[in-house]
Length: 132
Image 1 (cartoon, helix red, strand yellow):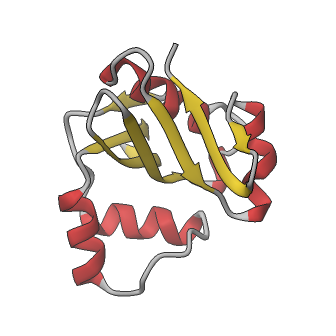
Image 2 (image 1 turned 180 degrees about the horizontal axis):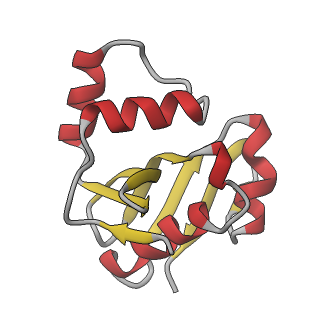
């Protein structure tokens, strides 16, 4: 069973290990990664038997827009709905009509489309979804 938490930030070492496993392109710099974690105003984690298996990091004003910086899922757990679950746990924290958006890596396009995001017309790798 996957447990989602938004009230507890994983340790820096756990997040770095997950990002490396998931091949997210982030700086190989603990200081910057630590600032990245501390300064995001939304952090949602997914856990399986005490192991961090998914993480979402976002910036938002909670009413107009929400930029999703990262969705990382351990490759051993991909295809189990964890990425979608992270997004679903984000939605209740935002007001109705808030626009969620992100910029994806080319290999992630199919995933975002599958979970309900749409392309901005003129920006091929920028995805968005409004809270309903």
